[in-house]
Length: 315
Image (cartoon, rainbow, N blue to C red; front, side, top):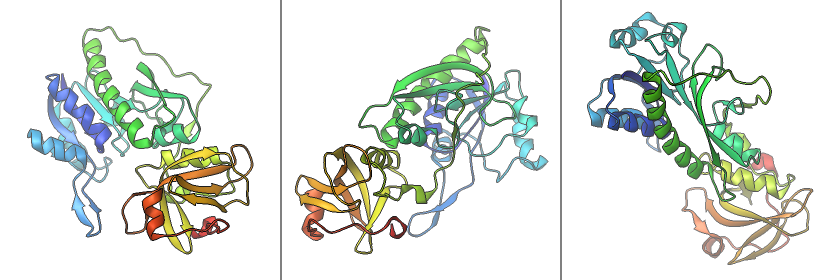
């Protein structure tokens, strides 16, 4: 097919690569404008742009799609279908109906659960046992369109947002190729989303990644996994921000935020109500430092049982 592809992060780049390998013609790639990144705040191209340029594809980076001048390159591309994956901009009505197959979205959840911007993180935070990929026909709503295909993925106990992202990106890349094959053959019925079970995956705010030790250990461990790799779950200790990259709930009793034990095996911190009552910190990082095992971290930051992490507002 002749496809205009719209996407920005690594999740979308996996789908673009798969579409090229499947032999589709992509006259235009839409991606968000380059953004400042890193300590030097230099402009950085999105993963989709980087891949598109390596493949020699034409790239269009409008700040928005309301301006007719921004729309014109898409109209000129005369696509059979638009394929959208984590693009980050709203498509206007003129594009939703462009081409004989409209616009298809690769969404990282089992719709209607977790419509919105951060379905992977929200699924982990909620303790969901499963998630998946939905291929959806886009309409004017927020991930409300009819579905073409859906496939489940188990959320393992050790899954972080990063590992789950990689599983779903690979699955989405395979599913969109298959969905287009079936669509071309006229074999893809669409199904309206059910009205029950709707949840919204709001964009992640950095403040959500602060570890509030008043919460149960199980919830805090989910935060550690949901915010790995970005923005990183964090707490404050003696006024120093510490990111926690790996942890596990364990038995323990004490005042929330209290260090119950500190050894090479891990740093045990008392949490809020519920059992198990403590979180064992296994991998940590001081601001400006490297990610370290608990044993290596303690060599440069000795802790004594009875110390307490700073209140959550200081994290």
